Image (cartoon, rainbow, N blue to C red; front, top):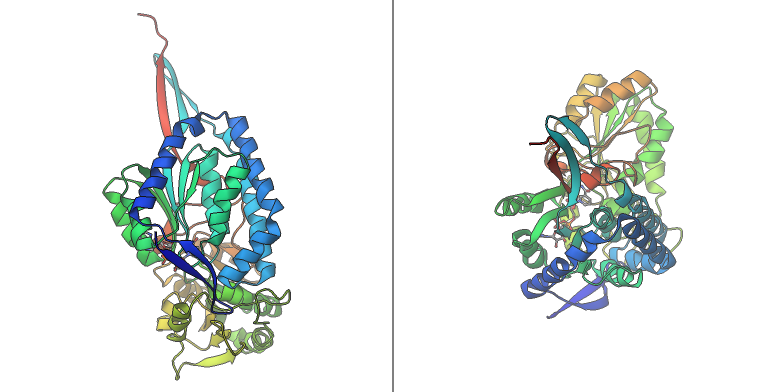
Length: 455
Ligand code: NAD
């Protein structure tokens, strides 16, 4: 195995060197997971629950260390990293309740008793991105383990450090060797091998829509199950009857949080024309006030982008003649910095409004009335999240139902909770993570008929 240099985005320095896996190491990890599967699925539900609680407790014990790893490796503010690791703990705790609640049904039939079971799938391949490395991994690892599967987890090459720690923590927490295996290497090699591997029953993938398409096509060869959590270009709909100050105060971090590298980023801010001036005035102060800087500074609200390549990509959406209406600050010197930037007014089909930028660039798109708002919100290939800001309760629900996305929030920009389903419509994905729904994606329904009639 050759080495992989892990870079710290805020300093551009090497943070760690880790071995780089290839096909051989991926196959070995699948073989370990396959060998561990029969014993793991046979662990009594109450004991599997206890092991998930133990995993949660061991992650909680290392909360600060893992938060710092994530802050340094991704370049995210330490306060955000702490909240994310808290969510990892919560996720393991939530799914610790699942092994004992994987209920089947009994179905009335002639001649006997019919019952259903939720069976684990076997070895599952989990492929995750760099923006929320351990958090997104936990959304997959926790329900997969709870349902009795064994795992090969492949983190993004840019941010493998927290997943490497999780593999160690799992063993410390008492999980049998081979139940959770981590493979660090290129997606085009290790990820692809997981997709092709005949002993992998399912791929749960979070990443770009482009790579997701290839995974769906590759999985077809072995009829693998897939869950895809892909890109987004979510709309934040602000009606003139909303609390405009509150909508403007909440809008910036709904795009610039995690430096815009968030699949749920409300990067299209649709504002009813009657409230446009008031909204832009309020937005200016909020954007200019965002504290961009050292991720390890407790006051920082936005860090650098994850890599030089990502910064280049983001900058390509803001050419010299772009309609930059508001620009925040960014430090000079080393680090992949990019200031929070608001483009306004923008047409919904402009490149910056149509494509996922995955950086701190927001587009403000004016609209007239509810019908146009919904039409513009839905004029995209994506369907992940979105928000509706209005003082009219009936409109709030009407618009929330009409927007074609997997998650919508009203008078709020929060999308993600451990106990509620998360995922996309259209080209934002297939399947749901979190909440009760995720378990269904890590089990198959088996129907058993038991004849009871004599003769
Ligand atoms: P990416 O698609 O480039 O990579 C994601 C993962 O897939 C990485 O681990 C990568 O190594 C692996 N990969 C790359 N090529 C592969 C291949 N051919 N076969 C198998 N695996 C392969 O995405 P990224 O740049 O790491 O993350 C950004 C993207 O992720 C954005 O589009 C964002 O919207 C999306 N995302 C979606 C969600 C969601 O829940 N919907 C959450 C976070 C990020």
